[in-house]
Image (cartoon, rainbow, N blue to C red):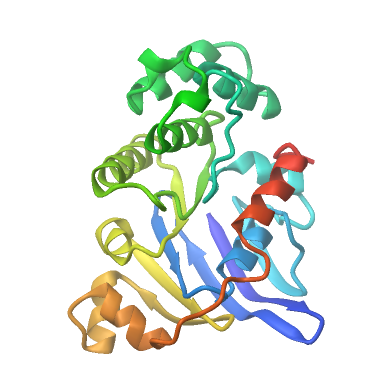
Length: 263
């Protein structure tokens, strides 16, 4: 579903992504982990058509983000690290607006919106303005919205950042259930190592623009001789505090929304 070969992205003399290759299978839950500034955001921006690579090849659902942007954008949904809902619209209106952007057919649309909002336990709040939602409710709505147009792939950029453990557990329950029900491939980033350990089928760890390890959580623990994924991660990437990538999630979200999610 996602194929990346020898991907490189340079900004002047700085190499943000340095010759990485990986693949993600249909229906797989794939974690893309790394310290701040490792190249995660730059890679996601290339996968989601927001940034052209310097060299290398990307295929998303059989299409090139450079050549077939329209087809690629129709293939995925995305949940950003920061909220991207319209606070002045109701929950239902946010869902319907997304459907308009993606040209979801009217036939069966109301039923689809109801199905997804019931799934994330928000149907009874459909007529409430989003500005009155808690952070967890907003995130649940964003997840429902991202599945609205039947995407083949969901990109989740730190989807549970700042949420309490109970809400985080419920969120992943929704995502895993939708993944099984709709066979949607899930590509996510997180700094919560226990999330990746618990839900990811496979993991790739990127550091300083290069993939330094990949495999299941258990394989990474065995490779590093550690007992937890967090310890494995620290052994592979070091203990030094890192600075954020220059092109963070807020810029990624802003660029995507300015384009309306489409060509």
